[in-house]
Length: 130
Image (cartoon, rainbow, N blue to C red; front, side, top):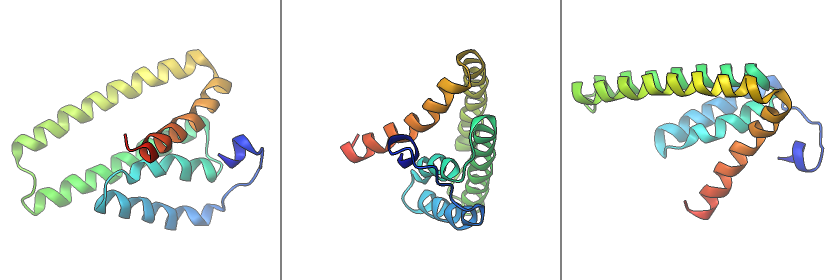
């Protein structure tokens, strides 16, 4: 937000991505919703455009795959829930394909704005309690 509102051109050091990602994972595992912090973390590290989308998607797949594996080994997830997870995962891929198509049509400048607007909107909704 500082980059957009105050025109500050600061980039978080790449070495901070590891600890920042660990914090996002911790929040995801304990309170949920830590994934909303992944976007701002990547943006603050200077990752944008297609690299932003690919990095976020890869991290999301890894995070959720390990959560499902971990929960299923402890008996918290049964076969019915795994089937639901597979269905939801396939729909996420459909959504990603649709999003990529829209991204190509809107152009990089509009998508750069949306990259910052989406996490800001999520934060505003969270602060509003929605």
